[in-house]
Length: 165
Length: 285
Image 1 (tube, chains in turn brown, yellow):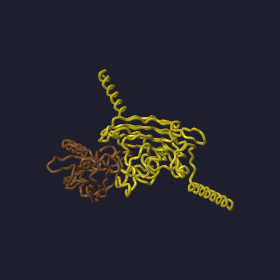
Image 2 (cartoon, each protein chain N blue to C red):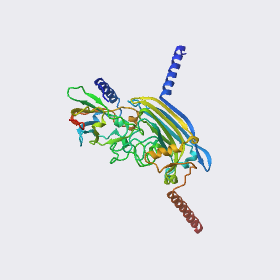
Image 3 (cartoon, chains in turn cyan, orange):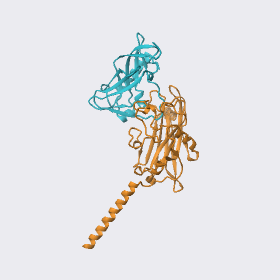
């Protein structure tokens, strides 16, 4: 799914509002980064607890955790676009969380095809920045999970769609 | 005294609130739950259920369904974890425009939700159905067995002390139709050993989406035992890893497990020994 820059701004504004309403943790508790993955067209998002206290985050096995991630992608001189992970047909779906101990890093492995719209054609060097946004609502309050918005630094990654140069 | 225009405004506001609530969720009032006990049709408790849009979803394309069973405490002996006597939930999907993957492929309807060992997206890491850790147990019940852990653990879904058992789901709506049937079922150690369970009452619910947001929702509509479709249930069990399981009918029975009998016999023996010692002591003095 392609999203325009105004939508990026709106998205980040909403995220900022959500962060302002956070009742459990602040944005300084978590840091996220993007790294190349172990295979072609793969990459990782690492989410680290940089606070001295344990931090709860939604698991990626439920929609709350999975849909919290978004990628901002830049290619050449083109304006950045925000993309969301591939849609999952959630059936049994209830909020679940995991706890990150102080200093702990949790790794999420992705393939380029997990992010529709990430690749267009051929070999590409992309600048990618990950966004992690968790809304403050009654589920987050009840589970005492981290809420707010953090984003990674820009990271350069190389991709190539099979069969193209 | 309030001005008539203010009363009218207040009344209109209340109507608006009522309409808003009516279109965002529907509730089924407490419905009596029947079970056969010693061959007698007996009301053992009641069921409440609701369905509507999940209002907090930023993508506005999810439902929020709940079901809650309250046991009449006159029948509390039938909800006894130690003896394997439990009221659980069995959920099937009867229409689905876009089923999720189970072992790499979407099942065809009707299917059980979740499948044996869970959906591929529930695995850790997600979608790794060859090496990933399963995200559910291998019983056909919606909530996982005690000790499996996580939000779906049976212990988090019921309270033996209060005689309650509940279920909840927030499924994503596809581009098209999605329909569920959720059943309250009874199981005991004997039934479990035969891989059987007794459905007591059910309700159908669901909704439609356009691929980006929900467009309608329906239910819950109560399914009484007279209208149970056991073939549909069995087909749903067969679809995703539960072919050995069977829904059945009959009396609900709770027989103490051997360990409970041992404890009971030990207690009675200890009491008898104590009594006899007291008696012997009183004879000596």
